[in-house]
Image 1 (cartoon, rainbow, N blue to C red):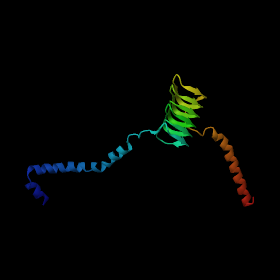
Image 2: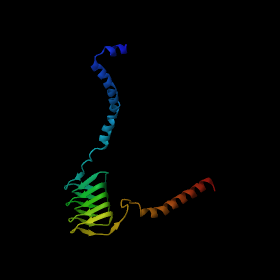
Image 3: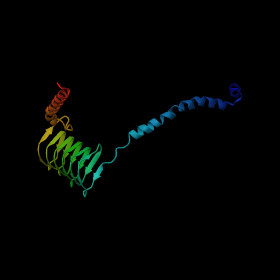
Image 4: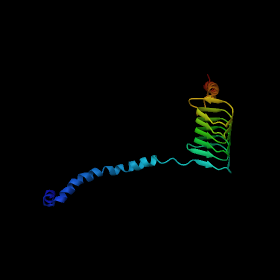
Length: 182
């Protein structure tokens, strides 16, 4: 039946038969079309930085994996990917970010892979960094310490908590032994 239609069909139909394998070849990419859509969704452009305006005062901690631009006042700790402190901004608390650009005032510790104090910056506190840039005119009062991983906050408290943890486990062992009647 198929052979009859092929024999009796004019030439362009045979060309269509030749196109059928191409059509079959185009069918596998159809399931692949969601993959580029998925790749496009995972490669979305980065969202704009969150901006806290100059008339805003935040009392509490801020934490994000994105970028923050502070123009107002924050009384609390801030953790972000990129933190930009505006000229009119004041932060009272610890700042931890991959990149920190200070144009305004920070009262507290600054931890960052890259820390930049511009000529209008005023920082009162220690800076722990991997790389730092301080422009002429910046005001800084505190110490500067270079660290390979300045974002690791638990380095100093760990030794003091280790003996406490050992004491706690010893107390648990004594309580367990007493419960067993040993």
